[in-house]
Length: 271
Image (cartoon, rainbow, N blue to C red):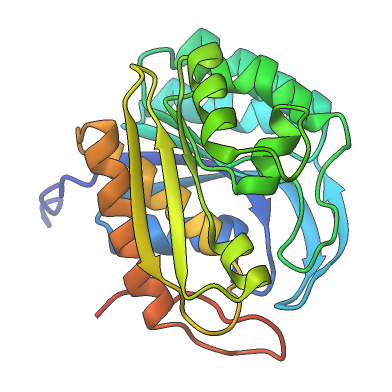
């Protein structure tokens, strides 16, 4: 009789996100990142999208009941080491996910990537979603990874508001660490460096400076948030996890591929 193979310790990571058929962002990005970093990814689909490396054409949300059914069945069997949340396309889905996480995973690290628009500018979620993320998801999250424009939407502020001030206010309000990415601003302004800021829940402030690579990338935000969730799953402190996640993402961007006619896709299966 054949014996079962020995179990390999790979911490399980719940991924709640939409499907991107280009493989650049969404579930595909998270699966690749988690696998590369040694975790067992468990995808919970929130929506089906039609998009490519240039922009999103359409978004087809799943009903909130179907999303929570996926989560309920999964969590009844497997307790994750961490959770990464990406696209929540409707207010109803966001509220349902928030309730599920509060009830079942209150002590598990949760990373929220507040996806509101595609890299090409196309809308991915309901307009009121930013308010719901702030009220229903951020208070249960360990960390969130908005870019400057997403942070402004979350805080109902102008795009030119100081991101460090907004991050500090959001971190204090929700007791959630806020990592503000600056790649979009650096690319728009042609700046040679990307500056990322973090405000931790305990009041600590952090800053990183990275060289800006030429071109634009599809799925870099998904990669960063997923890597951060992986690092937190391994027990790293939030500041340490943020640093490691950025280093992984920088390497993935340096190994990017160009399968289409739009943005580059990070090379997440790092060699």
